[in-house]
Length: 178
Picture (cartoon, helix red, strand yellow):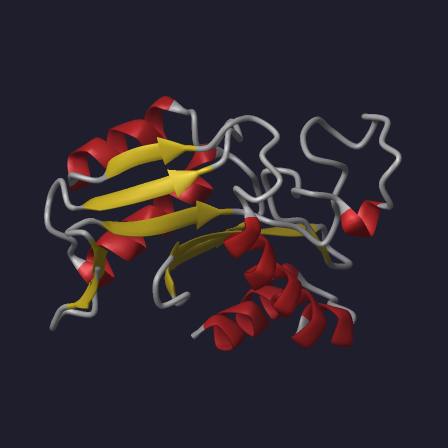
């Protein structure tokens, strides 16, 4: 049973699911790094690396998001020049601030990236009363919702321009997401 409540939070059988994710313009296979051998084409990888990587002339920009699994809306996001756990912790913090989910009634699902297995991420989930969830390692469908979002971002925004500065790209991502 799916139910929509006044504050915009959606529930399935009384529990809402959020999908915390990072995805990228560069993929390397279902797990591992760029050196991992794979027979798949890089653009057809089952799952992205556990971070976003969008180049600019100054360096890379990283994006972490939290998606509401029912509405497929971005409820939290964070942009940084690093891929440390603060990236995803800040995205979860924004989601909590915007939606104020009831304690114990919202599941935050993520992959097995180091950002999501970090002490800081787990602490933030517990402080917000969110229930953490992870799929099995290498599950091809586990990251589908986030991958769909990042694919659309790539097609509609990132592939359309060359970015000279991190600030320029961060502002463009902000405008596109919001």
